[in-house]
Amino acid sequence: MSTQNKATAEQLSALIEYADKSSPLTSTDLEALIARQRLQKTRPFHPNDRLKKCGVVNHSPVTLHKVGSRIYISGLTTCGNPHLCPVCSRKIMNRRRYELTHGLNQAWSMGKSLALETFSLPHRLGDPLKGQLDALQACWSAASSAKAGSKTKSKYGVYGYYKVLEIKYSHLTGWNVHLHILWILNSPLPESDLTEFGTAMFNRWAGKAVKLGFQSPNADGHDIRLVKHTKADFLRVGSYVLKDSISGATKRQSQTDSLTMNDLLNERLNATNAQYVNAWKEYEKATYRRNRTQWSQGLKGKLGINELSEKQIIDEPMFLAITAESLGKFTSDVHVQARIMKGLKDGGIDEAAWFLNLNGIDFHIVEHE
Ligand SMILES: [Zn+2]
Image (tube, rainbow, N blue to C red; front, side, top):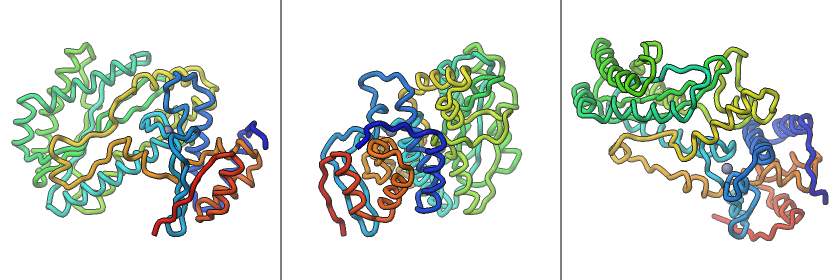
């Protein structure tokens, strides 16, 4: 058994292509596995960093769960980092999409309407990300939590909101951070009221930004619009604000576009551009322990949302916990790797047991009804 995995970029892309043809695993699932493996190899790690152990080290007896025709594996450590880990970020964002969709469905059936507001801050190349993220939070507090904010919200019939942080990077203009606010409203607002509402929120936002030493934000950094009153549009806007998870695959359309953090991770892994590599390192530090999403106070209860913590999400048994890295430990043959992936996906418990035996991992099997 070889302990070296010297898979080249060509082999990895062959793995993706082969698995695409032969199994229902999506290429993004595999890209996430491969990206995590590459990130684990490229980063210098603090000894306690869970990302280093994610999917590689076991925390309790490894168990194969057979559920119908599918197999899940549990017992391997997961890191649960929603900003950095390609595998955990996907799992967490999938769950968040599910929760938000459920909430928006509820809001629809209660006859609510929906508006989407976006805030950002003036920025230049070289402005630190941490400073922008801190300011974003402070400006949002000024716009929404102050007495004036509550008054505005009750005047326009705000039932609650869902807040999403989005971070982008441009090699020309630096960090560009946004807050997307999905407003759930008691009834559709006429265009003029909506503009009034958005302007009131934005003025407090901009006032705080200036106090913090930013240039006065202009209207380009702000937008508010009503979501069309159809169920399909309600649900579509939910997946729109949560579109961005990390897998390491390039999604960029053109060289002049801003990079999503997925694109930036891809740049980090390819390490061809020092500016992007440094930006990713800054991103790692600045996002430490920051939330990506948040429900307004009391809204989850009103919409009947059972929001799982990040820890609960990643602790659910997960088929994808078998990593490309652990596959690579005993073979660099992409066809064999793809066969195992396919075997696991199709519920081939013999394949899974064979794989774990080869890796010297002790395990037991539990069959669920
Ligand atoms: Zn992870």
